[in-house]
Length: 454
Image (cartoon, rainbow, N blue to C red; front, side, top):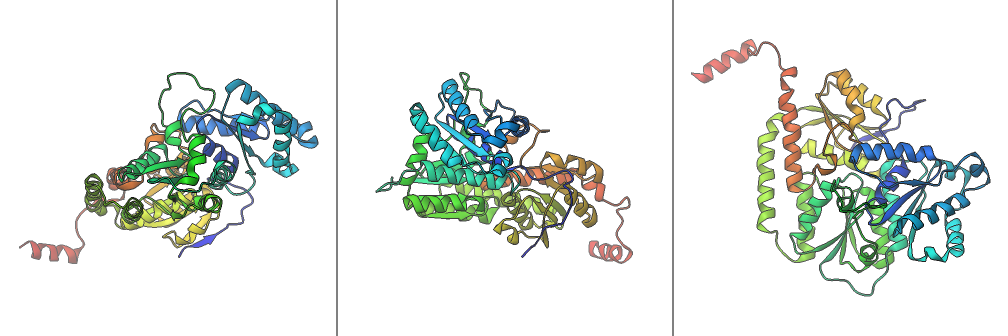
């Protein structure tokens, strides 16, 4: 069991964490016809927009209520009202996802009351789902903002049902899953003859496709109709501890039973997922899924020579940190430094001596002290990797100095297999740096080797 440490630092050096409102806005981008709206200043939205554009390399729909000094003091209901009207009139969106920021949270905006008042004044907004979520950026991090937004969608959109639709299941996808990961999860579910409703579905909106026409809102993703129908599903599978509250809210509202999977990276983790799909569908695993499992086993055999006893330093959001470190431990590597952005119940299960809720400076110091041979974190870790002369495997958000971030797969049998090859090849490429100049065996071992050879 890992010890969770909260350092008392007066400042953050090269921060690891991304803010709650950014996480909430990203979750809303997995909904079709949605416009994420940050209730705060223009600067709050601008910085988040830059990160999203650089990571996904796509046009990102993002709006702000543009709070200023006066509205911050007197209240921002008029800004929120005007923003909702402008967004609807210009885009005819189906959903407006309102995320608060530290500015409005510090003042104490009554978001629920403001939106009720706005709806009374403007009946033309009756056909638009306005989902609001409190995401102050002075607390927690991206992962919790994502989880709060999904919980808000469930509580405000899902409709209870009297019966269940046979073969329909819900997949609550955590923020650590890429669009490529979500596609892999969907393929696994559909292989058992089941119909998945994925929430949020970034694979439909931010998978890097070119639309036939310009859209002012998100293009693709989970539809409002599908979200409403989640109450008729037979089962809910939540991926990541951040999705536990959303799954519990769905069960409380519609009575849909759920199970939380801490990760989908690694042989045992995917086996557990497949066993659930077999139970829900009443079918055994198809031949192609068994083949994929066999390929993963072979990849593990091929790769374990290069992973064994390799010291690795990892920095990521809690659910992603747990998935990566657990997989590394299964491959025989040793996690010498583990850094995360916020507290979470899953941190105690990370296979490391300590987990530090810190920044990239903590990653760099820990990696240097423990002699890490590989760093794993997002693109902001590149300076530490250059300084330590250690290879960096980029993973998580944001990844702005590499192509294809949205299409990377690290879940399922195929995703885990590809991850072994990617990281293993990096270890092979840089193995010469740790090799001694003289490859001769020690004196005693040389004699033993000669005798064995004869």
